[in-house]
Image (cartoon, rainbow, N blue to C red):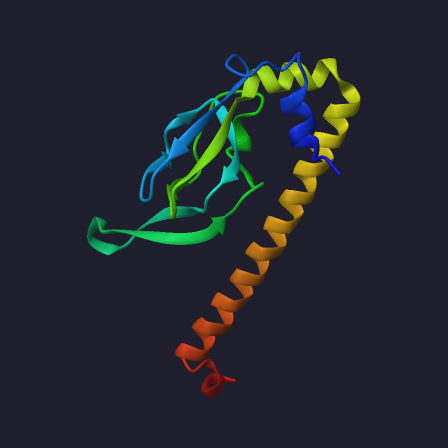
Length: 157
C-alpha cells in the first residue's frame, strides 16, 4: 500500500522542483540547525539522521543531547507546515542518504485543495505526534527514576 506522503509527492499538481525536491546528505552533515527559521519539512528517503538538542549548563557551557534517530519514511520539521517557525532541534546525518524537502506553505495550500489527502496526511501526522509524545513521556519517567536512584531518595522515605 502506498503511503499518504508518496501519494502526495506523486500527484502531478504537487510538482517536483517547485513544491519539493530531493536533497542528498553526507555523514555528519547538518540538515537543520536549532533556532534557524524553517519553511520546509522533510521526509527521509534513505539514510539515518539524529535529532539533537542543546542544553545550557552552568557557566554557559552547552551540551548536545541526542533525542532520537530517524530512518527511512520519517517526517521532521513539520512545525513550519503553515508558517515559518524556528527549528526546535538540530538534525545531523548519521549515514549518507537523501531527504525530500517539502515547501511547507505549498503543502498546506495543496492539502486545503485536496481535503481527503489533507485529512489522511494530518491523521498520519497525529499518529506520529502521539508516538513521539509517548516516547517522550517514557524518557521523562526513566530520567526521574534514574535521578531518584542516583540521589538515593529511598533513604528519605
